[in-house]
Length: 157
Length: 157
Image 1 (tube, helix red, strand yellow):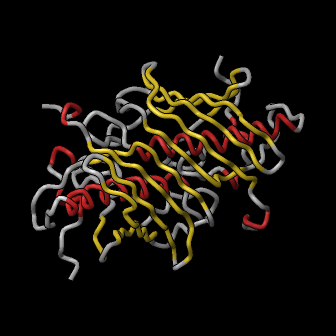
Image 2 (cartoon, rainbow over the protein chains, first blue to last red; image 1 turned 135 degrees about the horizontal axis):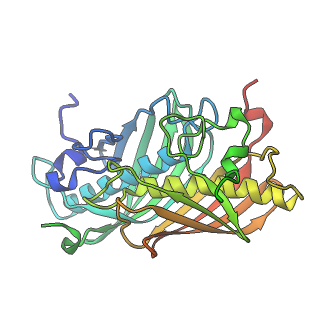
Image 3 (cartoon, chains in turn brown, cyan; image 1 turned 45 degrees about the vertical axis):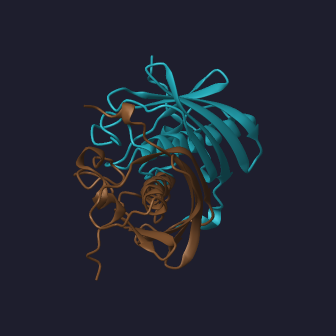
C-alpha cells in the first residue's frame, strides 16, 4: 500500500546525503514525501531530543522538515510538469532560495508532524511551495519556500 | 577571555533543554550567543553529517542556528532594554513567531558558521532580529526573525 517510492527515493545517489531528507544519511531525519492528488505530503516523527520548551518540538526541526519536504515537492512538481512519471526515473534536485515559517502553535514532541503542501508555481528552474504543518490535527506552522534547480556546476565530479 | 556566560547559560534550567540551544540537551547543537557591542554573535560548528549536497551544509541547520541565535538575542535585548546586566541573573525566554531565511550561497560543511545579528526592534513582549550568516568570511544566508515572549501559561509546573 505504501510501497510506492518517496520523491527522495528517486534522487540519484550523489544527491541523497542530505541530513534532512537523504536516504543515504545514517544520522538524518529521512523526510519522505509523496503525492496525494495535487498536494504533497510527508510525515516526520520527532525524536525525544528534538524538544524546545519541555514537551514541544524545537523550531529548527519544523523549519528543517518544511525545507526538505519543499525541495522534494519542487523536484516532483517540476518532473510532473515536464510530463514525467514517478516510476523509477531520477528526479531533478532543487535547493532552497528562500524559506518563510510562521509558527502558530507549539507542536508536541511526542506526535508525528504532518506536512501538506500545495505547489503555487512551477517554472523549469524555480518552484514555489506552500506548506501547512499539523500535529494531531492542529495547525502548528505555515511555511512557504522558493526552490531553485541546482546548477550542474555545483556538483562534484 | 571567553569565560563570560553565553545568553543561553542564563536561561533557567527548565528552559534549557532546546535541541538547538539548550545547555542541558545532550544531543543538541548548543548554539551559544554573545554581545559584541550592539550586535550579537554566535558560532556554530556543523557536524560532518549535517550535509546537503556533498560538501555543503543542509538548509535546516542554517535555519535552526538562525532561529535559536535569534531567540537568545531577543532575550538578551529585552533584558538589556529593561536595564539588566548579564551578570548571572536569569534571562526571559522568547520563542519564534516568524522566521525568514534567504539562502545566498552554499555554506561548506567543514567550516564554522558565524552568525551576526542586529536587533531591529525591542518591545517588552516582541523583538525583531536580523542576522547575517557567514562561512570563511563569505555571506551565505540572511535571516530575519520575530520573537515573542513565552507566556507563563505554556510552562509546566
